[in-house]
Image 1: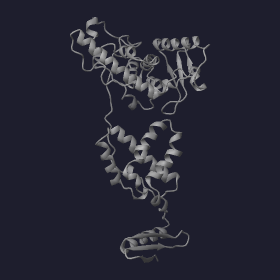
Image 2: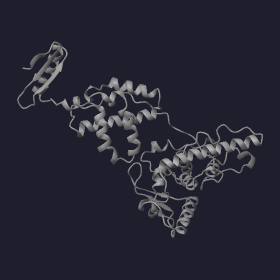
Image 3: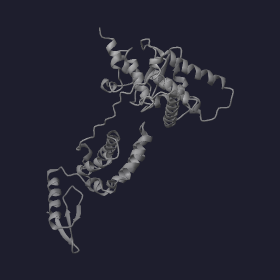
Image 4: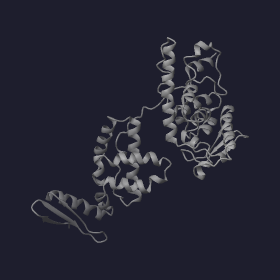
Amino acid sequence: MPTLRKRGHYQWEAQVRRRGYPAQSKTFNTKAEAEAWASVIESEMSRGVWVSRSEAEATTLYEVLKRYEQEISPSKKGATQELSVLKTCKAVDLAKRPLATIRSTDVAKLRDDWLKVYKPATVLRRLAVLSHVFSIARKEWGMDSLSNPFELIRKPQPKNARSRRIAITNAFIGAEREEEPESQRAAEDGELERVAKASGSALLPSIIWLGVETAMRRGEIVSLLWVNVDLNRRVVHLPSTKNGDTRDVPLSSRAVAVIQALKDARDNAKHKTSEGDEDDIGRVFQIRSDAVTRAFVRAVARARKAYVDESKAAGLRPDDKFLMDLRFHDLRHEATSRLASIFPMHELTKITGHKDSRMLMRYYHPRAEDLAKRLL
């Protein structure tokens, strides 16, 4: 039988002792709550389904997030991005609560508060990280009784599908274009040429053309090593990609020319003392991923300003869409859409690295006019 005793004037302590189980005790504000808790614990012990809740009740979400940050995140490829997410999660009021007290209603409120400020895709990433934190705590950190409230709530639907196509003066190898008067193409062509020209970075133009020719991700490009480049076979080897698989990427003639120019410049500079660590010496591009994004954003802004100034000087109205809403990842979209006109789907997935053809369709955005030309 459970033991109840009064503690002071306003609290009751319940104790449950049963052979084969550690003694359990908990304090409540009313006798009824103490009796109800003791009855549940005693029943679970009698049926052999009791699991200790003490650790989940004594550990706050903040403490678990901190442990997850130290033990789990460093082994992930996206550790830097995840650390930023964990920092945000540790700052919310819910982080002060013990894990066992967090319910799906609490999580739903947090989700709704975030959706007022952030895009659904951002909120979905944060919820996914928090859900994994709860799963690790239950499976590996001894909190067997802990339920995962993030599995019960509705997930926001990200609206991040993009159909942005990039106009390039020199067409991608294999792409077919009808001959058009230069005056008709002047307003739509040359976005990337303008961005490359406006760049203040010596490496960004090469990175841009390599991205739009190969459909490689930003991180795959900046981590490319010379030892994995085979210009004779026109292939680059990626030993580590986002989804964990290795991949060989074929190179177009323009991609080969870009890498060959970099190789020639590297060979000419071999006699000079190279600064940086040994890892940088073997890299094709000695630049960080975030620096590429910042340089691209600045170059797009400068290119747009130059385009607007040119249009005004010529007495023309600038195109509202030209050099607007352009992101570095759009290079992968553009390359995939162009490659899709050359390779069948099963071969295209080997080039882009998508495991699921449904994910690949997010990147394949053919122009309706190009599809119409295939119709009889």
